[in-house]
Image 1 (spheres, helix red, strand yellow):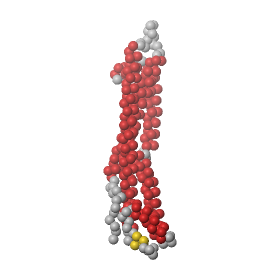
Image 2 (image 1 turned 90 degrees about the horizontal axis):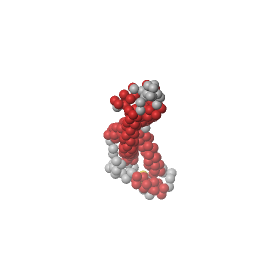
Image 3 (image 1 turned 180 degrees about the horizontal axis):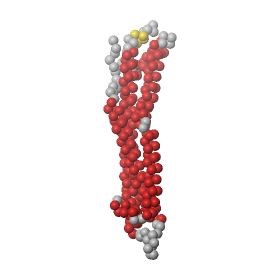
Length: 231
């Protein structure tokens, strides 16, 4: 790094290139900030949205079947089929229909308990799924970052080596413009910026992993199982 900085100081054009590189870095940082802002409501919010959508569908089905079971205007055969399907979903619901169509042992609390437990389970599962996705993304991003670091180091070494082996002055002692050197400098800066951007993305993934882990830790999960019949 010292050799790199010294090579820049010895060439005034390096200052101009540095200014250009700084502008590029500013643009890269701006892009990173925009990504961060857009990601503020990402994985945790996405998990909650997906869980809510799935829960709404499941709840709607249960409520539809329950409404059919309680609807005396429907045929007894239709109500019995709805009851059988409802009990296949909520085994702890022990209601039955008499041949006269009277609903007995109507422990609707079992349905409420099932839905509450299901909502928590779906939320938990959504968090778990998103967490697994984030760990996969993290592994891929780490590989990208490692490759970018190697590329940045190679470009920096190339710039240093060129600066060491090529004079900034011509035979008459006049300072000359080296487009090759400027190009190598800019390439090195761009590679450094890429490393910084990837590191920022990796940090963001780590933040999401932390948030999801915290949400999972808050969950009081009760997996929908056979609940005791209400008396």
